[in-house]
Length: 299
Image (cartoon, rainbow, N blue to C red; front, side):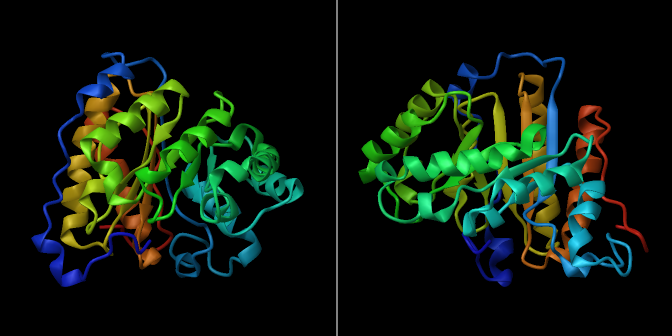
């Protein structure tokens, strides 16, 4: 992910501290830990050839990458649905590879809906998108609607119309990038809108856009896109801060967490996911499975 990317040499100058907890989060978190909480951790794609011999067995063919990915992670941010509309048969084939395990696909809404023209004209296409991804069945996780960098608050009415037209039961998060959305008055408007229709707001933690790491929860679920920097030392200290925040959210009643690790050099993603899972398990008394390297040690 290039959003918020800065030179590697500038990373030590960034204040990566997480913002304070917004007061409005009390509106969606009940204040005490719930009996069944779900945590899903994964990467943006399964087709990483550098994982062959490291995470995937040597000789693994492209057609079997997803089979191996499912053994190592319990969710995936499905960016491929942003670039293409897939038929139900293809979606069902992917879902079948997850078998009986608790694995979630988190499809990114097709760019023809989110990035081309007005949202007010895209409901028929959105319904077609919904119909195809329904083939994921029990393996369908949250959808996320990423709007373009130029989609600002001047298009509020358009966003409001589109969001209100979606089924209330649809598990969807919205990702906004225009800087004006992160001003206090606009975040207040967004919070009111999304809470009213049971939709979430993506949190994007990236070096050059600290405003997008906003901490606002509009439903008792969180979707975090963590943009790391190829195992730079700050990746680990940032994860440590996230562990504290997630533990606090869980203690306050967060029901679901989706934590997606992005990295320019994806061959190193398993190391950081493993670090995250180890730390989270230790801090929260969990037993999440972490990626297992075929050869060598993660640390």
